[in-house]
Length: 77
Image 1 (spheres, helix red, strand yellow):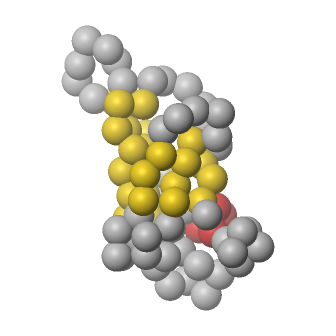
Image 2: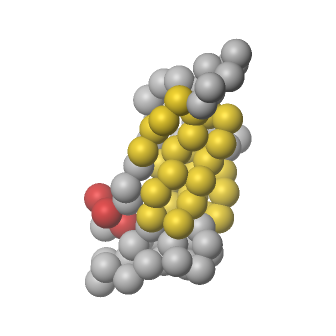
């Protein structure tokens, strides 16, 4: 399935927006699509090098909350 999702990361919309909090954390959210452009339901979305991860919903949307500022790579499986 990883080969099937190779092109997914190019189609993933990643938005980083800071939350109003003392910890200065943010969230990353977006959509996961397969190679044909269809939403990818229930895909595992992880930030490489962290323990942060989630599952996309039935429309391919995901949200990762309480993410410290920085640069991240997103892995979808």
